[in-house]
Image (cartoon, each protein chain N blue to C red):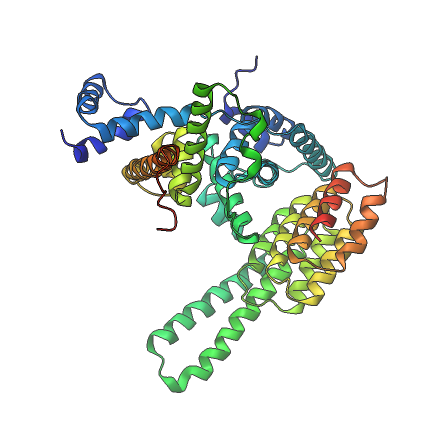
Length: 266
Length: 196
């Protein structure tokens, strides 16, 4: 066998997953080929590079984070475990409230009409299309806001995921998301809403809302997520809140540590 | 000794027993730290990235699927964490100095010195590989991942991964011997090729 043929076997030879016969074939080739032998020797030497040990601080930080998360979980009502499947995902996106089902049907119908128009439209129809497009966007916003106001946390999470589909959500959607970050009883909804708002962080109102949420925050996990988000955004008004958190002995230790870290980033 | 498999532990985490994540941390924080360290050559950043991986495992625990090996899923998260970190920062320009042994710590014995220097060349050769080649090599050589797991993680064929590993080893060999022969030339007093 030449080098090219052996190249198909070498990676498996290195990981030790060849049959005895294939292994013999490779070893016969290696005995007569300097290049492949050197590459094999280098693979062995790579494995001999010693592993490094992280500092003890890593474990301390992990334990603080886990504790903060458990604290956050204990503050919300128990929710059934969720396993992922496409069927469940589809079902989960379908609202249970008849009015929302109607809104979604209308939305899908509008999208269908829009596609139909695109297929046949001439230039003179572009105005109508733009109007229709706007109506579809408005419908989506309505669905998002309605879902965000539902009783069930699962529905509110769906509202957050609907907001992701909006190219540019209106103020009502943004206010609903900010309010979810600040006041939603479910940690998962608060975290998801904070994530969703990252996309619209160029809006001053959104930034202000995130800083307020950090200031008012009751769940350490959400506060840590907000600190990271606002540090990424380099929002100057965060510094004042971070200093307060860092110095407040009643604040969770993990949050205080993250606040100190964030202040260094600023 | 706890013999529960990674997947069993992760299932418990997904179902709300999040304290069990501590056991997965014990098993994986050092390999993960070394995964990031060999990609970034920066200790404190690598620790931050490990912390971020475990944070995301908690946040996205509901999306863990039984049919995927936990390590595949975890390294998928680790890759995403690194991509996000890269977006936020400028690329690392050189090998972190803290990884090289300080001069006074180097052994005086000639053989030991040579062996340490070869190790150093290997580290440098690894650092000079293009990012994607280095990543696939690290995943297959150090993280105990089979080629089909890496393929699943990167959403491509197993054969593609094997070809990438082979190419990466060829490139690594070339860089490594380039560095080693440069040293021999310097030792023999010949001019190097740098700046030629």
